[in-house]
Length: 158
Image (cartoon, rainbow, N blue to C red):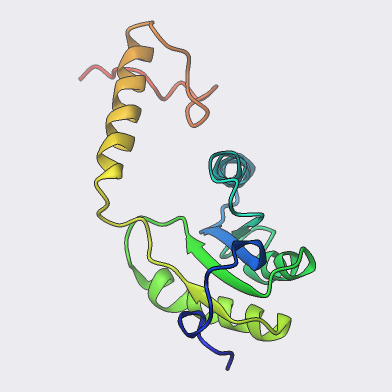
């Protein structure tokens, strides 16, 4: 088992690999959305030099692939950040097991961070989505990436 990240010097961000992991989907558009999110994360947090997307299952890149890519880019330790809302089974069991296997194979210390959880920032995210959808229904905004072409963002009559 590799040494836990908490016992290491966490100050050198240039050698920190970040893997942002979602569940993974059979729907290509969903998987592509994680890649767009990672691009957004990189654009807004340039202090992190090594960031890779990963899917827990159903799609590539896997956690193992993403950890390997981090190491190839110079990471000496890896933080796996779940793009999940709640601390369910995937966060508690599946992702740590996959992260441990990947990190041991790559020979780097690792940590799985907390899920998104109950951060007050999520209030702004939900409000933003709600406002955008209502504006789209009212004809004041275009469809978002999630709904584009699906006809989902509309008021349904009973």
